[in-house]
Image (cartoon, helix red, strand yellow):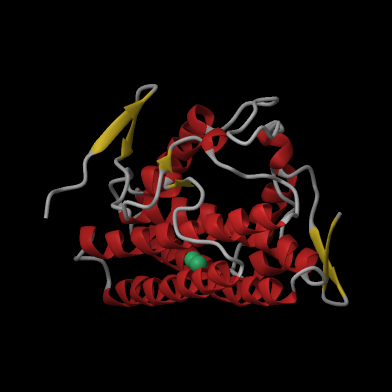
Length: 268
Ligand SMILES: [Fe+2]
Ligand SMILES: [Fe+2]
């Protein structure tokens, strides 16, 4: 098995793309993606295809952590193994749905950005801070709003997303617990967490689309700062973010939070 290399963008050293079947076109920037933004059949297939691909990437990242850090505590390795199992189920359920919608693997470009960034980090605590505590926690915000919004139009998709969200809470929670535990044992690891978070911010600055940029299907993209989702406070609490951390995340999101009333998610 040949080692997975690195590539450079604007002075940043990112991990080379993971292996993908030949049917997939892997792109590096969100402006190269086919996110339509509408709700017609093609836009909905692309949305499912994109989420499916992100689940594959989550699986790759958790599995690569197991391979790269054989000396990690057994209970943490067990959590990462369970995460692999969860992510593989998420891929399967979304792929099944994609096919019932007339879609197919590789129908739209995919990105492995989360892998490119996370797997460029050389320490496990930094990877947990990047993938689980940042990317997956951010996905909780997105899915927390998306699932109720789709309930009327496509109840099956809403249910699939809600099932996935329940698992994601645990992926974020075990990372929060283990980061805390590992930092208590060795305070120097806090520096690793901070540098991983800074590295992610730098990668975002390089690869995120700019305000007004047009993506590959002609959609004009908003400023990334305006695309920060409303915060899923309830699930972030379940994932054991502290009140202070949630307050800071809310500040970054312009104090918009997701409020569930009668099972509906409403951004406020
Ligand atoms: Fe997942
Ligand atoms: Fe996950």
